[in-house]
Image (tube, rainbow, N blue to C red; front, side, top):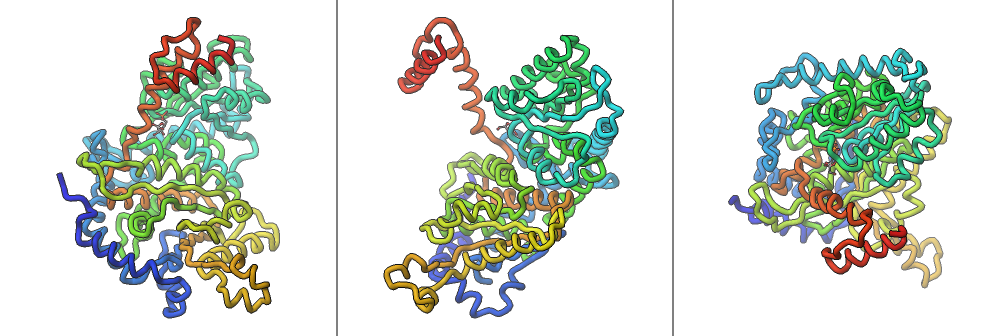
Length: 543
Ligand code: F6P
């Protein structure tokens, strides 16, 4: 078993350094360094990233980079990109970066020409998308498709719905997409009740094609379709396509594998948006725009793969996350996009970051003795300003926050975007510098109210600004967070690519399901709490 990273001299140096930094204030760090704002910034593709409003000095950054050296970050990046089996508990390569390699790139892994396979699927997706978008693809009764319903959960839902919402201003007016994920029957009911089966196409997305929620929703969707189209089973072929790595299960479900778009076990669910999992997004925005999304991802992949640590944006931001999480005691991390179109971004990031780094054993199975995964949360600005920002400004918690904004709006509405963005700039300045007692007193505020109006400041933020929200900048942004997540996982010496913790709940739900529906009362051989809750539920269901 390897020594824990927390025993290293690099880690100990940061622990000691944190005691000094704890007592510094951003006001002083800025006052003593006129060039700080520009110096502590970097660019990855179109993303300009300002990390000067963090509780760090040049010494901190040096120590963090030394920690990255100790953890072997550079070598681990190379190992991921080359297709080594870095997902050790599942003995798999981790190659979501291959999904966005250009057609003329070269990558053969485990004997598979990965680039050729990726582009073969992309070409099939493009041909299919064009047929649906142009109206050439017809439903069972000869009508064109007007609504695409994506059925999937976790990575088979959150990526597509986030990107569809983010790129709404690029979508065709000829159709809309809806997303069903929850096994709560109201989700499917609400999303289909006003639809015409004759003009509806279901895209069933499941890497394993065994996920209870998705298969149950897909079965109900098929019943709904057949009931609406006179019961002719031949209709399924015109109204159902599948995205999966599991062709035999797709066939068992009754979907023609000619209408299946594949991907590979080296694509984790939460990293799968740029694979065939993004099919509904491609149908909505068109193949060309989808390829721009992929090329945006690739730009930041190349940056992460090649930039030295000093200017490597994902590595720097990942190290800052480790700094707050492991040395300054932060528990959560806010993500605050100033774009209504990014209203599902935080939900998407929650799976990406928390399913990846919510681990408590090292790669060799030893329990970690340091903190791992942060808790991510957020809402678009300015809505968040009128909800939870108060706690960030004047509460007692340390909450590093990412502010994400765009210089140009997707729709020009005169000065409204400028007003919106003035909030964006005002918030990070207010969080950093606050208002001192002297400033408040100078305004003539009554003495007993002064303490309530003092804004302590010193709240750390990252500002990420891009010219405009486009498919390319969205791809860059998602790749940025993927690689931040990877960087943290490397430092913490955990596996960001498995998710065994989700399995127990799935197994237990399958075991309990019959107890809720069977005629006779269950034997009551669960724990006393679960027995009593099930009995109450059965009684209220009249069983
Ligand atoms: O939540 C666990 C999980 O396995 C995720 O990792 C995955 O994205 C999701 O379930 C859905 O899995 P599938 O695509 O196989 O239906």
